[in-house]
Image 1 (cartoon, one colour):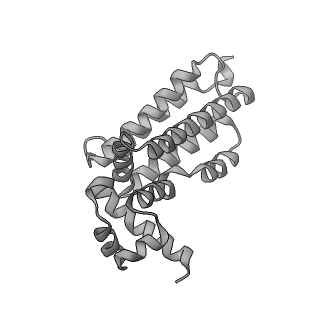
Image 2 (image 1 turned 60 degrees about the horizontal axis):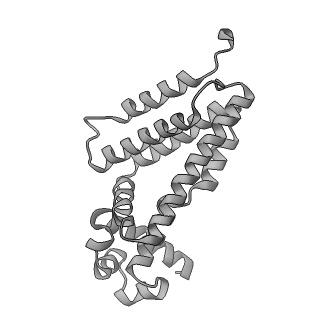
Image 3 (image 1 turned 135 degrees about the vertical axis):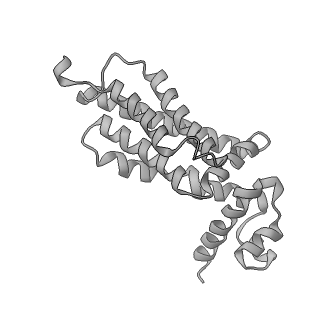
Length: 199
């Protein structure tokens, strides 16, 4: 196996351990066992457990901006792009058995890890900036009303995504299915849509 392939394989296996036990609850021995490698091999690719944890978070959740651009750039207007981005976010959290748990573990560890805290902050600022950009695109192209409070809109949409993240991580989906969260997001998007016949 090539070094980059081995590194990716280690990260893919490590995220499953980290999603259950977090940074502080897991050991390099457990991670090595999950990866089916000797513990020393981990140190060939990563400075230590913390480095592997941060790179696992980056690989899985922090670096989706290229994917987001691909999703949003193919849409005909700002509202459609915003809808596609939010649907991607919601469904990717919902479809993964481990991602919501990993994100919650990352958020918990960020309180005591400055590097991770900064990376999470930058991710949140990045998605907030992209949502604002899409709202402004929608206002300019006429698909979104111009009289909305954009800051409140962004906070509402992010709140709904994070709400569903917590629901998924707590495995309470029977209480709050994906359709309910998407319905709430869709209602917000319908409320900001500029209806041509109401002008």
